[in-house]
Length: 219
Image 1 (spheres, rainbow, N blue to C red):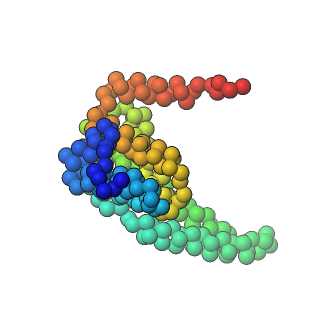
Image 2: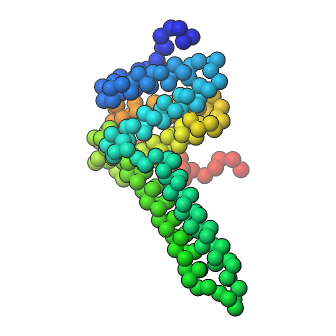
Image 3: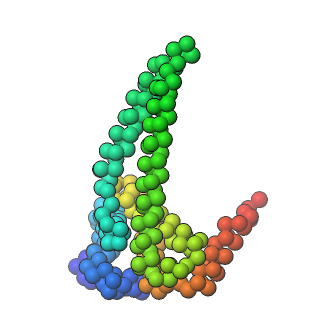
């Protein structure tokens, strides 16, 4: 019940104390997200909790990489790029009969597509770099870690955040699936509070590779 103090698990307590020490104020927001999540009578609890956790992650990234361009601004940029592609496509299609082929229209269409793809790829690279900057500051061991380990950490962070963003924006999710995501988030921060050694990293990466390469046991 929300009228009493929420009992944190051992892992949640580690994250709470880690945030209090390294990110003062975030621990209260984290606790608030857990309280919201525990309110079974709140039909929007997944959305609200996801919004809080997503905001914590974004502000962590901003601390080391500066504010990222707002979603609305990025969408406007992409919409503008798509409109250029559409216009170029209409010009190309309207003159695409062999006897009236407009080479310049075709070139403009190709260039518009390339510009959009380059911008999109650049955005993905920026997001990856922001996460890498954060991880190296959160966990000093990451700076000298194996490339495969850094890539795995970056993918896990972005995967968790992607789900939280979708739920925060209204995507439906079951309670077991949402709890799975929040547990991954907690486990991720517990690991940053207790960094893995290089030997640990090698062993974990080896186990992951073995699992990924294991043939399906089902006939």
